[in-house]
Image 1 (tube, rainbow, N blue to C red):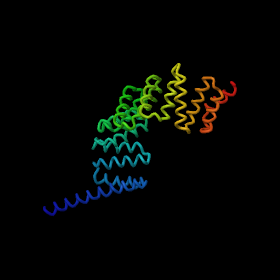
Image 2 (image 1 turned 30 degrees about the vertical axis):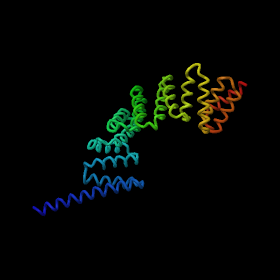
Image 3 (image 1 turned 90 degrees about the vertical axis):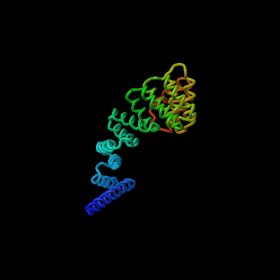
Image 4 (image 1 turned 135 degrees about the vertical axis):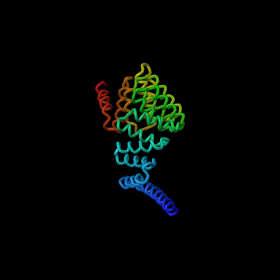
Length: 272
């Protein structure tokens, strides 16, 4: 009886050591980009301990690396059923759902991640974007606003995302407001200047503001071809054809595939 007890303890110890060894081997192989070897190691862990949530999740990570997404989802799901309180795993599974166009499941996953870790700003951001893509603007704005609170140093980016979201849904005044919030936090954010110009250009009687923001975008980012083209469009609408043509030419020099700039440059020459 005593001998059997000792043997049982030794067997458990060997199993525990084997579990940890295979698990660490899987991490090592994955870190070196050998995904097949990592997969084999994690499967060895699961042969010994099929209820090891970490091994299921890391196998899911590895299968995702190999673009075997349905299998990855399965192992993430098994791991999370055993140990649900892992926000990074909830987030990663949600990203796979999004890639698979399973958007409602992605939204549920992002919600689970932020429920577990309310300061998980990236999950809040992705939740906002997923909700926005489904046209659920009030929920999207709430999620992105929470992201801005959770990560204040990135708040300008979240307000920028909100501005783009409202612009996509033709809520131009709200788009301008969100971009203005972003610029209050990051006055040198070239993309925001460009996009607030886009929103203002669809509103009447604000051409001077439009030109100002497009000009700021091109000044702040001299490689921003679209901004130069937008400056050209704004100048062209004001009848300043020579100045507009110069801006279109700069945009084309930066990005030779900028078709709209070619068209507008040609019309500048025909109208003079």
